[in-house]
Amino acid sequence: MKIQNGTIWKDTEGNVLHAHGGHILKHEGVYYWYGEDRRDNLYVSCYASEDLVNWSLRRHVLRTDSPVRETRVRADLHLVHEDGSKVNIERPKVLYNEKTGKFVMWMHYENGRDYRCAAAAVATCDTPDGDFVYHGSFNPYGEMSRDCTLFRDGEKAYFLSASRDNADMHMYLLQEDWLNVERFTANFWQGEYREAPAVVKRGDLYYILSSFCTGWAPNQGKYAAARCLEQGFGFQREIGDETTYHSQPAFILKLEGTEETSYIYVGDRWNGKDYFDSRYVWFPLEFGEDGSVRMIPCDELEIDAETGRVRAL
Ligand code: GAL
Image 1 (cartoon, protein in one colour):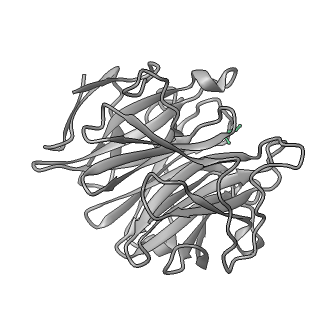
Image 2 (tube, protein in one colour; image 1 turned 60 degrees about the vertical axis):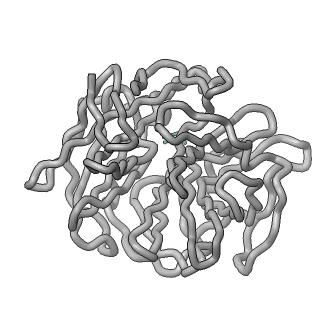
């Protein structure tokens, strides 16, 4: 099966696929792709696939009229303003917590008018593709929190987000139900202005990819590797070209097949003038024994979700 990078992708009904800034979660043999859906009263949509190529729309899982419920965390519960205008939800990520049986979504929240809220928001659901219940937005430990990602390491989960007006990257360990941050574990890349973080583990090493801060315009991607996640990431090296092949990280898909484990960089090729004309690119990542990472740009990617084999064409 092949995907065509940089073209408009359609779901199995022939409609444009709306899943930017997103994340893929595998649950009981099915891949669920969550991402931004900025149309009408929508915020996040969820698509499902077994082959990673054909995606069917399951539900608009977060909308202006989504159910809202307070948790123990004091938060701003508004999903819409009094005048009916939308807030802004970006970069939704979802993990499944076996202890609570909940699918937990973290995202970046703004008021839809500017980027000054710089907040994290949380929602949960009993099924991967049901109506998510919104639990509100807050500033973790009072800190700014913009471009974000979730990363699961065994039973632990971490939330990472750009802070201090994007100058630094923060990492938090989540509490055991993943509904709140537990501990501020690391503050790294001070003054380096990185965003769009994406984390993956391979062997003993944790890797992070990120972009520089230039809004919708693409820039030089970088990566860093660490042995101890909780200490954060240090020195970054460049990956891809000066525009990361015209893309910005959304997440890294670890594809564990029957024969191979492959790592796919999923990037957004934004159109800053027309958001809805933004595209996706999926590029294989190649890892060196010395901790280096290479991105393999391609127009087409052949994927075999069963064996785990991917090939850049
Ligand atoms: C980018 C960021 C996107 C979105 C955009 C808005 O830098 O990665 O998620 O927030 O800015 O300009």
